[in-house]
View (cartoon, rainbow, N blue to C red):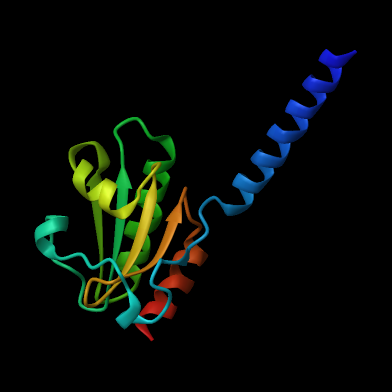
Length: 143
């Protein structure tokens, strides 16, 4: 009888974990510094990213070679960058840039960072974000 209770508890805990993760996956949340650029703790420049920043904002995507959601994220971010003038999309291979991954606390791929024109990390998402969410996050950063 005790085994049945343990199994039921494990199933319940796994279900709750899955629902919470599904709810949070791909949501663009304010970065550690919040929405105030002066409070941003992480600033990235062209030397770290390997490419120039966008004039108005930059979408940074951390990916790995065998990540299926990374391909969909790449497509969404490229479409948004093409739609909004002055926005750049930079994809970084997480396995090749472990120092940057550790510094920014990237724990899974895809991870998306939205940078303002100065390179401050203003928004961040773990998982594949929706196109509408990326556009809304850019609107908050560019304004």
